[in-house]
Length: 339
Image 1 (cartoon, helix red, strand yellow):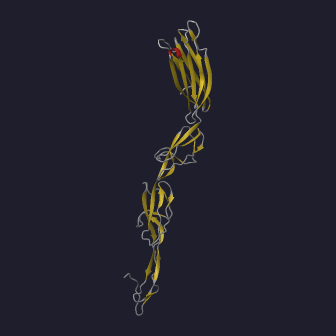
Image 2 (image 1 turned 120 degrees about the vertical axis):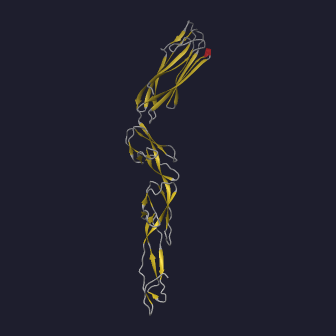
Image 3 (image 1 turned 135 degrees about the vertical axis):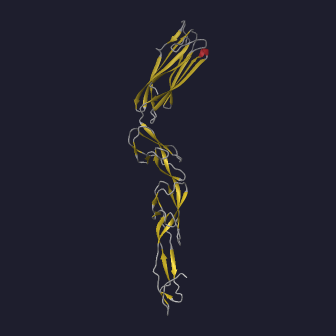
């Protein structure tokens, strides 16, 4: 980074010599510049192009100087002039009183505060077929006005994700949500492993420097539902993502039994009863001794393995019925037996 400088170019015909301050046979040019910050993100470059030359003979030492500058994506010619030596003096010279001046404004990248310009100078001494081209880039620095938040998709897919905001100004985060096959986006974090500070869109940030945020993902897993001795019904599997709250299915299985009474020679008070078990959510074990979940319960982290399948078993409340009596002439009813 610089605030001033000098870019030099000179040509010396073969067999002659020069030094930086004066050409004893040839042409020497200097592009001197000074940068002054005009406003936040804009710098004015003031320049002076001047030459100094000296020739040992007055015979047609025709030379040409061209100077152009490129800045803000545009190239502008600053100077394009021929010098023709036709005098009869023993020596021909020009000095620093022959100068051209001007200025131009360089805009800066909003988030880095950097700007630059490139000076190209071409000198030719035609009698000696001597040519020299100089191209030099000067980089400037000012107080930047913006900062950039870059979203690293961290394994996901998306176009470039970024947000530019005013420096040291409270601004709501608003980044495009990335995607990733088999995963769900959870939030942004200052660390790729999610161990840093987390942000979601709408959170307010006040930054003095650029920031990279990493997408944090939740893996996909499935939950299947076992009826656990159900007699009818079905429950579809559900899809979930690690770290994201989502609801389990409601147990819509049925478990219904019919008890038929055989009077075994006698007559039962009724021929049958229907016994219905009541569904009471889910359990990780078929025996009901594992972790229980209510119907439609919100769950977050049942599996951290991508595309894993978790099986939950229907949990049933016990069912009961009052057995009927039976009559048989000449006999006393003692109860019921499965045989």
